[in-house]
Image 1 (cartoon, rainbow, N blue to C red):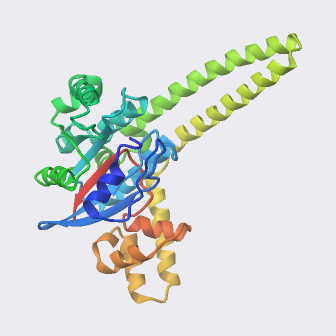
Image 2 (image 1 turned 90 degrees about the horizontal axis):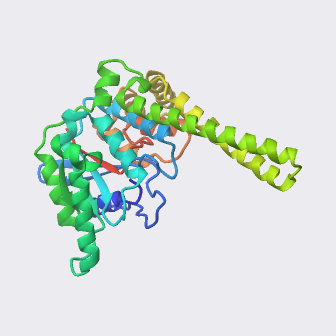
Image 3 (image 1 turned 135 degrees about the vertical axis):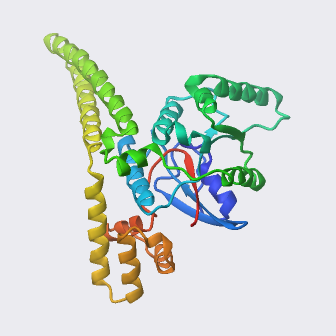
Length: 347
């Protein structure tokens, strides 16, 4: 969820230069990966934007996430856990929070829920008695109502409070370290079962929401068009122009919803093929043997494992198609999920 503190969480653990937002707009617009050493493990944290994001459509979010999850699963890199951050300072549970929770359930599947930690953020100080008590009541409501966290908790998901400190963040990571690695439902459905994105549980849910949105917009359009006829008949030009602007706005929203729904039918295999072709093209164009090796390894889904690949992943910047494809090969692509951090152990 936008503004829940996930970038701050990553920054606290890794002491890295991660942009931290302070407003209601999303700070994280693309996938950002950061690593740190903890005991015998190298922990990889993936900071991602959320659904109902201020900068990305929900369809783009799911589409890019599915590509990344496809790549990592095919390369036998599995998730250890998912950290979902929720602002306890919010006075009510927003529609954005509900959407993110519903997508989380459908992306993961019941079997993966024990590897999810629901962490509340932005708590008031206990000395601020009235606010702190209200937040405790809000936390209890989240836990007890099935439409919020209740059904997740029943299926093994755990909850905690994140107070913004290094110790608190490390405690969450340490808890996840004890858990077995997982395969998300969307990974199993797309890679093992050969489903298209729209055929997955998450894709169907998003598609149904878009269909409902289109239905509501068409109803609005019918009402406004009726008003337009009335104002034109009464020769009320001022109101007629206002209604005409409303019609234009609704028509644009309808077109956007239709475009999003159509893009859910994206062929992930063709996207991966396009990535491979671009990376191979880069490999052919370069005179550097180690760069060629890294690029070819990336095309084979192995780039994240080699030192040359890691080196170039840190050096390459830019937004050209080839650079984007190369980043994709290293698992540094523009990914998109929720206010959730994926926690991976390096192999």
